[in-house]
Length: 174
Image 1 (cartoon, rainbow, N blue to C red):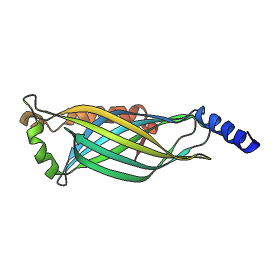
Image 2: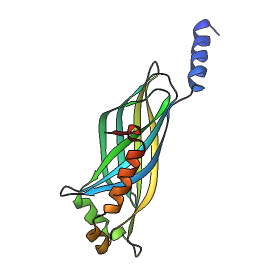
Image 3: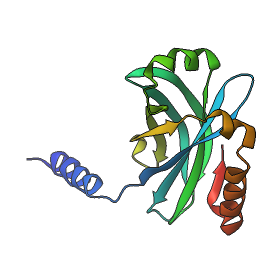
Image 4: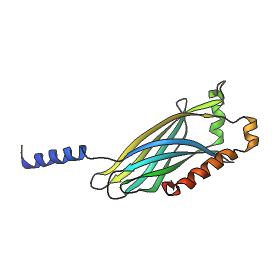
């Protein structure tokens, strides 16, 4: 084995054993219903083990219900991940009303919609280049009843305001 092959093997082993950024989807919430559709927001916690900030190149997302894609998109240049820290990202997902109408057949007797959100967090690690951190989150959204719509969801707004007051520096709007 010559010197170049030894160098390649050494570098490959070091990169393979190197600590890498980690991410998890902590929550998916309904943020609002408007004329253009329904807005969901996914909260993503990203841990950066490096002593320098890492730029996020883009975030790709796909929202599925019963294996059907109901929303997909790409968020270009959403910011960066703080050095030696965890960063909370707020990833908006907009679902058009026309797609929601097709979901009516998926709603069972329990009045909920099962969903899966798939994210691809593309980050730029110095020297290595772009890597994608794949994330997936499954859950169900309980549809509001008529009485819920009349209340206006003010209890949820209060809860969100209290969470932001606790630590507003941890939430990064995209």
